[in-house]
Figure 1: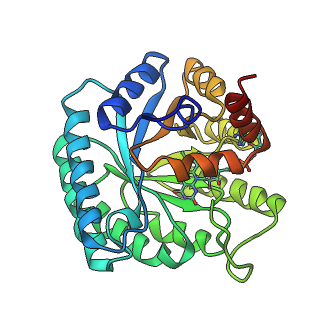
Figure 2 (figure 1 turned 30 degrees about the vertical axis):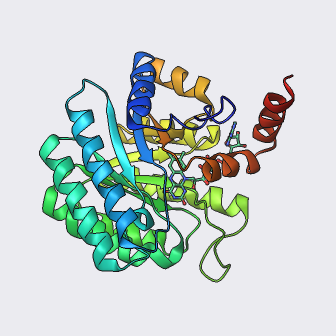
Length: 279
Ligand SMILES: Cc1cc2nc3c(=O)[nH]c(=O)nc-3n(C[C@H](O)[C@H](O)[C@H](O)COP(=O)(O)OP(=O)(O)OC[C@H]3O[C@@H](n4cnc5c(N)ncnc54)[C@H](O)[C@@H]3O)c2cc1C
């Protein structure tokens, strides 16, 4: 069982628990992106198993009345085993998502995976139409070119700052520079990109900027935030009428994800410490 301390960030160990969490968030007007925890499988067995679990999840979402969708990680569905294994599993999940009308996101991992992830997304998004989205990272210097390439690919883009510690030769390292580029890319999306725009950030400055751009270009957008992070803001933005999606991970492999959340921010570490010592 997931200890209460981790359940702030993780929506349960099972799909049933994750779907219950989605139902609760939906009651507050927040839609949910479900992600089964797991990454960097070096053997085909677990990659295929997680792809099967995503297909089952897509079916479970479709047979419910939930406002929910899924997000997969390339290395979870076979990228470290082989590009072909990844594309095969991604296609299987995309076909199920397309059949059942459930939106399918793909997370972006470190820079060594960017080309193969973009290629696979472009191929499948063109094949299946608009029900798929891809995450792109503002810290990578290549991203403006990648967005131009994706300009006429159907679907949605989730713009994030980037979670991976990349080499300075290919990535912006200073927070102020990443913030500046994030805004430039967001403006580019509102100006040029025809598909859906998702602001994958907890940063009030980026969210305010999206609001300005939306008014300027008269375009909708969605905000995506992680479970356990600024949840009050998630509910408030949803109450304002903005489309808010919460990215909620679940599954047995919760410990390393929880540990990452605790490490990345002092407040989260204090929260964990308080829970342990009971204050
Ligand atoms: C839905 C979603 C999906 C993501 N998918 C990917 C992915 O596929 N690939 C990838 O590389 N990265 C992904 N990320 C992570 C992303 O790249 C960033 O590392 C992460 O979101 C931190 O950047 P930020 O824009 O939220 O804010 P930061 O730059 O970390 O912080 C800016 C400001 O936001 C507020 N804030 C941030 N965190 C908190 C907090 N915990 N509590 C309270 N306030 C806070 C504070 O005001 C802070 O000053 C994803 C993020 C989200 C939200």
